[in-house]
Each structure stands twice: as structure tokens, then as C-alpha cells.
Length: 102
Image 1 (cartoon, rainbow, N blue to C red):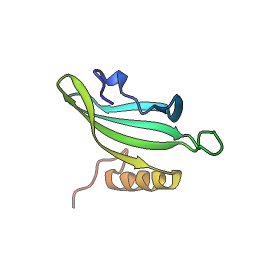
Image 2 (cartoon, rainbow, N blue to C red):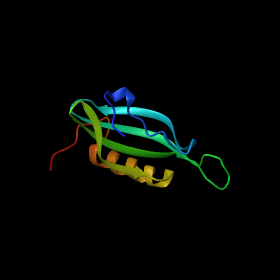
Image 3 (tube, helix red, strand yellow):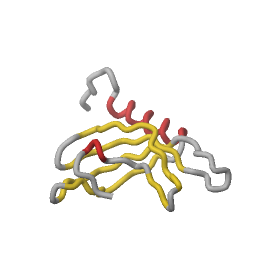
Image 4 (cartoon, helix red, strand yellow):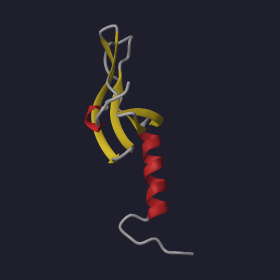
């Protein structure tokens, strides 16, 4: 689905009047013709009719003819994967410190 503004971009998704994906939170990482947004979301479990565990998706959008269109995405499917990504980023960038050059 295309959106004219960054604020209109969402991962909420309905099919046949049933919400299948619920956006919990949204954080815009970069703005401009190429925009990157990180979403916290939940999928509907069709068996229990409850929303499942929180997941994260990072999506890139490109503004084409006045509309933002999704170009690619990366999904973080569970907390363990999120922790591993966090740990590697902390290692690579040594948050709070200047990285030492080799």
C-alpha cells in the first residue's frame, strides 16, 4: 500500500474486515526520498483469535511520483534474534565510545 506522507505509512493490515497485523509502535529512522522505518507489531493467531508475540520489521520506502512505496524489508521474528542483533551492533560500534582503528 502506498502513502503520500511518512505519517500515513503503517504495517496495520486487514483482510475481509479482520485485522491480521496490528502496529504497536513506529519509529522513523531516516526521512527523505528514501525513508527507513522500524515497526513493532503483532500478528493475529487465527486459531486463538489473539495477537501473538511482538515482532519487529525494518522497512525501506522510496518516494515515487508523490507516494512512498515499500522497496524492501527485514523482519526480526523473536526476542532472541533481536538480542543477537543488538549484541553484534554493540560490539561493532562500541556504543558510548569512539571505535578504535586497527
